[in-house]
Length: 331
Image 1 (cartoon, rainbow, N blue to C red):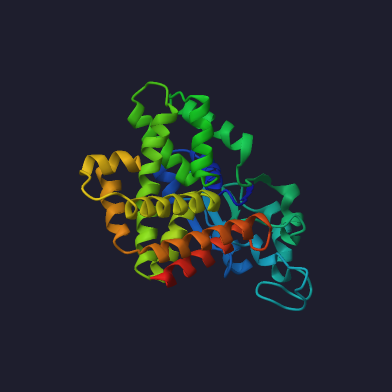
Image 2: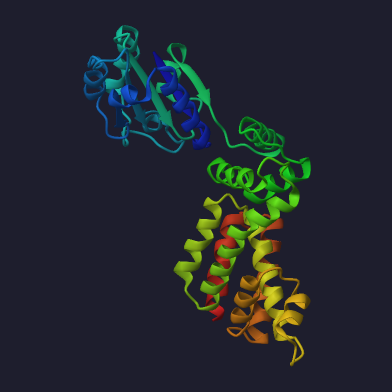
């Protein structure tokens, strides 16, 4: 029995693997008879020896190999012998096809990988023998349908506009999306999840990270700023949304600098339109780190970044990383 599970959506790959495990029987016995192998350094002999091992007090042995297919993805510019590539094709892995046909019926072999090219020679050789599932990143209508289905499976309900906002804020990272959905289900306690619920819960995490990003930028800590930027990426926040959040924060800082003296704390909070004391404190502290000239320069760089993305001069991620480095140099 052979499964091939691959794609950029590693959350769905993991879910599909869990389904395979569940179909094999009791969780504890499956775990005791599961072997994971690193496909990047695996030899055919090692795989064969593992697959030939009889399961202990169970019906099946599960063998999971990650990264084997990717060894044989060849870029158009690549020639000759490279890592995992052989002049005569697949090398020793030519034997895998015939071995699988005689592999013990007690063995379930699962090949897991990231994005693999359609012309991958090992994939083409094994396709006819396997149950193949491909998991591209979710986006657009498909992502929104996934959100609705996931919440329905968990026994919840969500308003259409809340679905739209969740898709916009989190994007196609289903690990981050699933985490947010669990929080929203807990927070809503059986009622329909609303747009306000999404704004309140999802924005809290992103807001904290955007403050950390602007702090790092203001203090000239470029490395920390880049790390925080990539943390936002990992949470599924799109580059366009990060750029908008940075612009919003610098706008708030500029507003603080322009406030008339003598205002009470609550008046300042109202004028800035901030809902929490945490947001107010962070913005007031950040405003102390900038003068009007540096704020003006920051605005200029934000505008240049927006134009670079829209004109196609740079990709959105590259433009944003350059922006963070330039902003950090202002301090």
